[in-house]
Image 1 (spheres, rainbow, N blue to C red):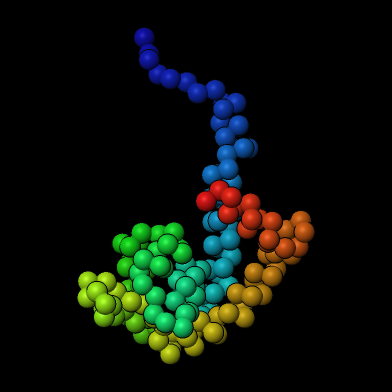
Image 2: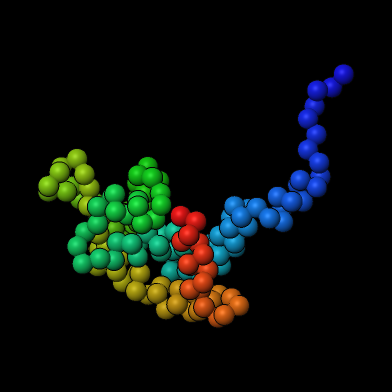
Length: 148
């Protein structure tokens, strides 16, 4: 006699059609692919663009402030910084107030690479927002912020 648990196929359909997590993941992957494709000529992925943009500040950023903004852990941030540092686009330096901590900043060539990519980001972003019901991402951003 089998003790196998059977989940009704109707449950599968319910999850497919209503799961917020699944729908947000699918949308996030589609958006990521679209921005990856748009940013490829600049040698950037959408994740690298977001990371570099998070470093575009008047003063160097702490690792903690960047991990909080991007909702990633420090290990993931450290791994994401390595190729940008190798390309000479990001500086990672000890924090003078706490030698164990690191501060992050864009180099001049990193700023130039980011500046070159911004116009295509704007164009891609505007095209995506136009596809939304009201032609604006404000409602979507607001709805997503509620879930955080």
